[in-house]
Image (cartoon, rainbow, N blue to C red; front, side, top):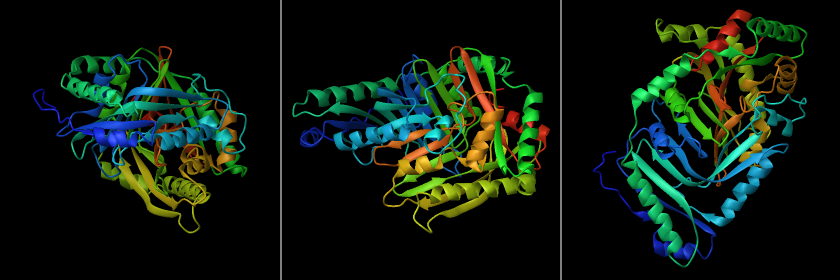
Length: 475
């Protein structure tokens, strides 16, 4: 955006409509649209949340099959932080969204009202009968949602930036004018958009050059793989997803972390959630669950080969697609996704829309499928979330038995890792990613995890290397 560009300061709804709506709603979303906006959403986040500590979020989507972002949401001002422990997070979230539907007006074209947040892996215990999971070593809340007051939304295909904020309803114009002035000041602030790439890259280099320390020694990880294979031979389960955590002692700005991922390891989902005492930053290739209207979609990612810039990626794709082990593992997890969606879908509506397509990333190549279903009339998107969480590709099959073995073998809980993060709209639509390829920053340290599905014919050394390939962005 150029500094001399004129701000398009049309506010909607206008003051007359605002007064009419005030008779029905407690609060109203007002918005301003800035056309011809083509700046980087990640750098804009660092500009709008310059102190790096105020609660906020960014959620960027690259639609399947595209190489560039289609939509970026930036939570600039947060009205509430909802922390949930020892309770089903969907119960609390359902109440939040219902209150919003009843009390806040928002234009249909503006997806402002809802909550952005995550659900930790251990919340599986609220949806199924599971083991008593080990504690999250980082001490993050089981679930946390940010309810935004002011949001910036970039529609990259349209080159537009929409700034929105919630104002109290009133027949007087003071509240409306204050909201309008806030948005216009925010729009003017966009003009001072400036950054120092040399400083950003220097901090990223310092981060990458800091030694990563494993929580589990390699020999113990390999031993756990053998233990899983023995359980498979005995008929206890078919597949189990084993993971490991690494840690670095380093301070790094949140904005620089997400910039590193967006530029060097772009994926379908890019996200960052910032709270006063911790942050979650990730670039995940895997959708957990998307619901639009009554259509639910899961996109399982299973089957991986390391990418190598010295080898033609088409050769690696052929090698991955011809792997009997990867194909069998993938089909099994697609079936698990079908079964999970079937719990809340109308009979005969669960379909495999695409099967074992390859997705190429800087560090790995994955096999990806898409499964959809039509939710029954007596269920909603949060029921679909509960019935499918966590995604089978991060647990194994059968899911409950795999979770028991994971709890036995892994030395600590997973916390947010292997859970889900995303946007839950007041209209019932949700868009969530699996929490993988993700860093959690807390107490002067950063933690990140990698894992892989273990099956009967897994080769321990190969499986161990796969976890490192997946963490290449951080190690």
